[in-house]
Image (cartoon, rainbow, N blue to C red; front, top):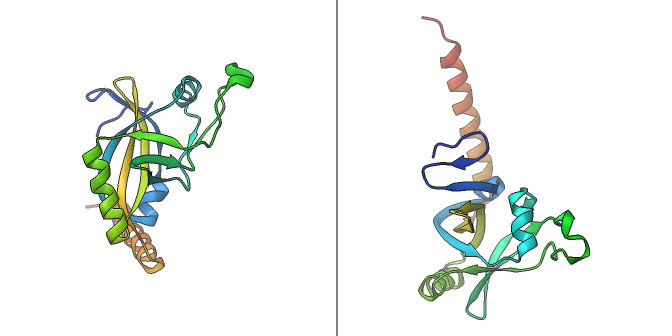
Length: 162
């Protein structure tokens, strides 16, 4: 996906707010699902100012609905005392069939629901949720070693003279 320096992809009308890079390091991502976010006004304004932290956040199915937990959306200063609660659970907007399918996979096969990124798509707040399986320590080490060797190889090819 081609983006300009501000994180906007003009072709799809996507404006990236936050990316959870640690999730791809800690989990094997099996499937990615897009969901809408139910937010209050000050949360939307804080998102537009990129006041968001996805670290250690997760999604969970509760009473047939999916909620995001651990997402920190900073206070919107001009709202003063009328601002939102910064770490409250936030509802994800998905079709019933999708929720039921995800709930079945999470319950039976030991998967987790992890938010990968939050962005605006055509002016609406969206979350990319991954159906993921946790990595073991040796998997993480292997991925780091692979990345390091690839980086060194690219560096060597770049500086090689013919």
